[in-house]
Length: 124
Image (tube, rainbow, N blue to C red; front, side, top):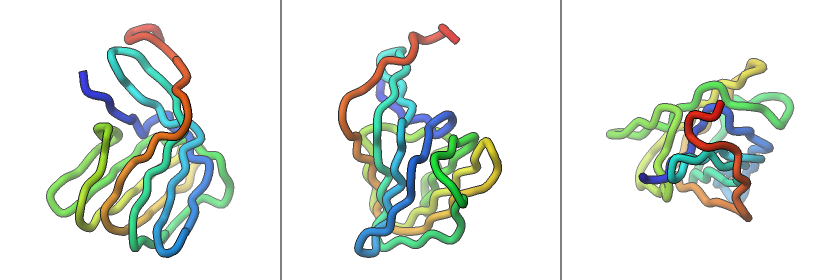
């Protein structure tokens, strides 16, 4: 089975602007791999990007998320590894209210550090 990152239940720790790029820092992204759920730090990076709406405080938990480009849309999950070319936008809606809206180019996901086991499929 391919690995996917679920936006739903992933925690965003910060949104940083670095030299024109936006880095959405996940305190713990929720990853499905081999019928197991894992948590791992990750970054979703968009080049030449801008933030048009953001929550006032972090960390926040995503209730719904969409990453969309001209010809593709990823609702609540993205395959991993993930790297695309072209214009994309990100919209996250958070469990406590508020949204994050980012537009930019060439999104990619980078995983950071080690994975933490959370659950087997069907354990919840």
